[in-house]
Amino acid sequence: MKRRWWKECVVYQIYPRSFLDCNGDGIGDLRGIIAKLDYLKLLGVDVVWLSPIYKSPGDDGGYDISDYCEINADFGAMADWEEMLGQMHDRGIRLLMDLVANHTSDEHPWFIESRKSRDNPYRDYYIWRPGKEGREPNNWASCFGGSAWQLDHVTGEYYLHLFSKKQPDLNWENPRLREEIYRIMRWWLDKGIDGFRLDVINMISKMPGFPDAPVVSDERYQWGGQYFIQGPRLVEYLREMRQQVLSKYDVFTVGETPGVTTEHAVDITHEEAGSLNMVFQFEHMDLAPRDVLAKAGKWHVGPWDLLELKQVMTRWQKELEGKGWNSFYLSNHDQPRSVSRFGDDGGHRVESAKMLATFLHMLHGTPYVYQGEEIGMTNVRFESIDDYRDIETLRFYREWVGQRGADRSEMMAAIQAKSRDNARTPMQWSAGANAGFTTGKPWIKVNPNYSQINVEQAQADPGSVFHYYRRLIELRRKHPIMVYGSYELLLAAHEQIYAFLRTLHNEQWLVILNFTEDVPVFALPSTIAFSQHELVISNYPTDSREDPRSFELRPYEVRVYRLVGG
Ligand code: TEU
Ligand code: CA
Image (cartoon, rainbow, N blue to C red; front, side):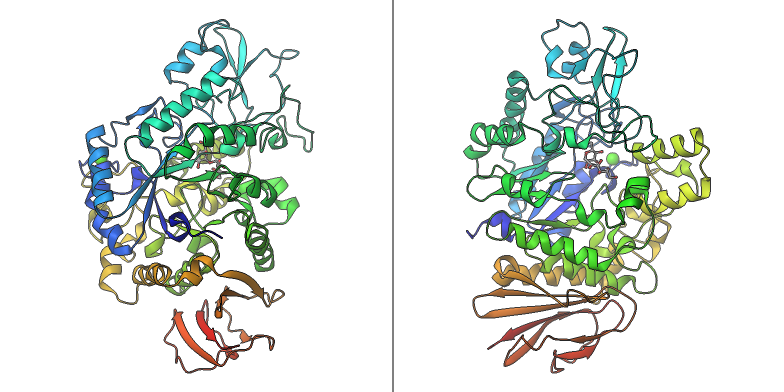
């Protein structure tokens, strides 16, 4: 396993719209990021993944791009971006830009041309098909609901959009289009960035013929993922991207790959034969019985099973070990806040946020921290749908409550638990007006708990989640075992404790996580022998002399022990 900087780093994701507003228009901006680079340096993160800041009509939070080489005026100008990059590099912080190459905005000049006529030179930049028997070319559903096809009256054909109808899918079968994407990648790399996060990159190859998806429900449109996830030419396209662009720069790439399997991940991230350094998998984001997932999809609300989490994470740890490389995240701009979803955002918010942070940093892979996670920010739970902004959330509500007459309170409960806006409320900097995010009217309301949960309070409190993240990041920098140690699950069948070993040479770290508010007794398997132990980190006051072989865990308690001399 070769040593690489992108294995050793900690990545911090910024959703710019909600990070910090410096010009009072209620929208986060690049100057806001510049103003907080010392904060990120203090936290200790090495890399920033910046969600899209390109020109965009904003239909899907900037993931609908109309000019890849122009900065969205909401965020500032190219000069601001260049200053931000310089200031990041001055602090030894690297920058990943978010490349959305599966689709553009329908306001991109390519699409404006493409829709003009069937023989337009840009026609084949996108995926156009005639209707079938008066309907869409096939029965695929869009990820945001409704059909994945939109009829365009100009030429009487349909275009494919796996997301919103303002996000037409690009046709990667077209080598001219692929070259355009590689040109854009080079343009940004030549400006000095350090890599890319690649949006839904495993969807760019679609099954030729666009076959209908099997009908598995009485819905009008069906999930067609088996025909566009890990499609027939994906590995070929990624190899070409590596050969044409990535191999020529010292860059770091992470592919966002919904539905990816460990087998696909090895193909994509293999140290020698792969094309990207790592991928984001989604299995731990869908911990629910298969029938619940089939019925409610991401909107399912209910308990998740720790045994399933242990199985999922252990499979990913073991099946990539020595072949590819794992990323690991618990939240991002598409997911609910991790302390609300996996911990306890009530009485044990601080303890469970620290326990989850330890889980994030102690697994074998590169950890990703999402803005606000480092101070234990929680889900927001707006009462009115009018306070939500996310297209996916609004479409869900409109279809189920508006068109199908579903129970409003039940749908609002699902939205409060799973809406992407849970992660998009403004970063909470202080207990001042609008949590110090803006002097104007924020584009989305601030979470009312900002007066208790904010950076100012966290920095002043030595026992805060923030200082705990700093310690974890510092430990990673000092101890190669956190980066390169192998992983071994312990107590596989325990329903409350997640325990595992990390081993590097003759050193072992024992990680013990209580995922509940109960007080189970931890008992170390007798097979684990050691002569000395040292308490590395814990989230409660703990007597370091206490024997780690057996003790009672407190609610959401985490302990990490260094064991030597087996
Ligand atoms: O997300 C792709 C994706 O899988 C999401 O649709 C996710 O599954 C869903 O939002 C969970 O609720 C990427 C971006 O991260 C997301 O913000 C964009 O909306 C999407 O692609 C289209 O670009
Ligand atoms: Ca602003």
